[in-house]
Image (cartoon, rainbow, N blue to C red):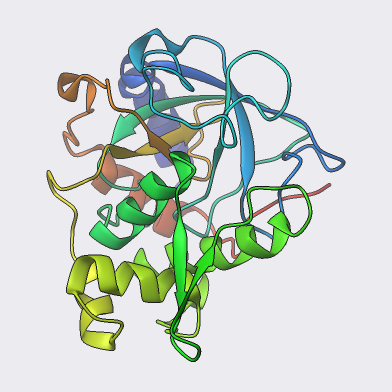
Length: 262
């Protein structure tokens, strides 16, 4: 067992950094996760120090002014997590990330519904749907009740990304209902099942950020939106996910919390 642990981290060091392309730093807010972070999920605020891969976020990158540069420092963007079992920590805020079409720890493909929701959010145009009143429910991009909208959207993304954090489909969530209508054509469970399908090339300009801390340990994966990303920058799996899963489930205990506040 000791030999296994002496070899595996070295292999991660060898195969991991070559895929790293983006430097991220958690920014802003009273708790260090961003001005609009709520509960144990997003909105998270990440500053991106080298946005050349993605273009200028807020310009060619496609983010609206309401979802970019909210921390007031550098080029930043608002995002949401797509998996549980891993953490990001404001006390160690510096991370590196690579683009992908699936998460690492949970090994879940980006779904159509999650991609559509985040693309609408990033562009500042997200509208939910209330199935009881049959009326539109806009995402509150103002500072007033933005935390409520953020919590609902995070739950919707978790539900559509393979029921992460135990979130089952919930049509009373206006953003899940909107995703069901956009992907499935109706606010029904059947529509949500269609929205839960793999995005493939129908990703609406949304990608999964595989996030790693400074010790090359996998951290909590996030979402990013760009209209100018180079598809060739998507990192092929190459067996890394399987290796990471093997390390996670044989060498460590499953960690259920999403944020680690020490």
